[in-house]
Length: 117
Image (cartoon, rainbow, N blue to C red):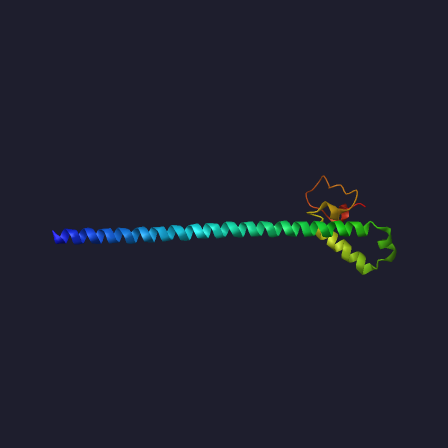
């Protein structure tokens, strides 16, 4: 009878050990899932900040380029800087494309030759 009790006790201890191990594994997976969710939220927030910053810069470049004083006083380097920034942002920010811009109907990409303003 003592042998059956020992086997039962060992089986119970093994069951407890198995439950602890399984529970720990589940906790680790839950922590990883929470961490991945937090990282995704952080990446989305950073992308949103980047988009807002780029939109602000695009609007600023647009204001400068359409201001008559800019063209009276700007040197070639300053003009090239503004055009480079505008070209970089034009694909994602309408403000960078300038006034009167109409997207081409033939293709999805924007090139400097399609600008009007």
